Image 1 (spheres, rainbow, N blue to C red):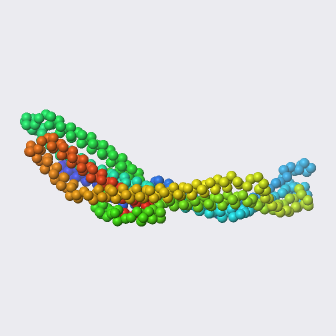
Image 2: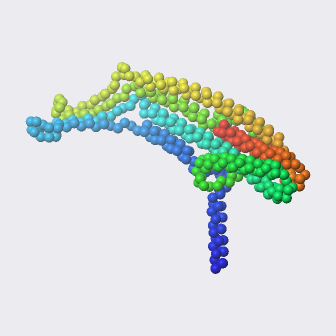
Image 3: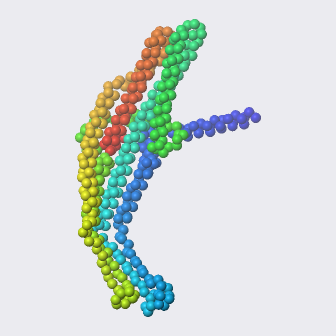
Length: 422
């Protein structure tokens, strides 16, 4: 009986392990970006705007439908008959008409709709640029906060062991009550900070899950390759090169430029709308005109005496001037963003390169020695607590600096609209 129970327990254990493995999603930034590009709901929704704009082009290409009108005699009081159509006593008339658009209105509408498609495409790529930056920035922030959480985990674990040993010494009368309280205070403080950090990480992971359309219950284990940190060298770039890249690739700048083309096309269309269209018609009347069985051809043209589309033309001219102003503002914004991001990236890089690469490892070894010396009463509690605070602060600051460095990398890609640093 024991063997089947043991077997069932082993199977359940294996199933639980598989389930936990499935719930943990290992993810690096490149994988996250692929999931984002394929599954992000905001991008999918924005892509529908492009398809709608393309549908406007189809509409603009269509010609006006011909119109058919028909009128029949309802009741003949002489013959006392309804809806007669015979030549002797009936009467009906029919007209077939077709609107002819003049001044190239159809082609101008097509050009305007085509400019609308380009604007929708630039809006899509600008949204992608912004969301991709948010994804990268959030990814690195969450990753380095996870590294900071490991510091808290190690410190809390070490303090619990130390606290347990001191409780034994306290019972033996070898440790003062005030020392126990100080150690417990430090432990509780670390646990509160650790809980707050875990909540921040959960918020950041939620943003990543939303952007990559990942299951809410997935446990993200973010990974960073050493090459990402090593292959980033902003000092090898120049402001002029970055500015040229931004002017060439920034979708928001292209959107502003296309906005001018759209306004120009709209102005041409509004001027064309001032030209009256012509309606041609062909009519047939059985007995209501002279001679009987009358066939006629007609033309209808509005006389532009009062309404010559003045208001819409003026609006189109103002929109064109507004577009030119927006383009100048966008250029100025672009130049300032590139300069500010580049100088900040260099400043952060200089600070990072000035840190001894062995600092973290040496500090980890030193904290182990400090704990051992404190247990052996070679250093005082105050010295131990001061060093513990210094260790925690230094480690967190280094992780924050690493985040700022990698975030500057993403900002450079963002402001240049390219992937200079992959």
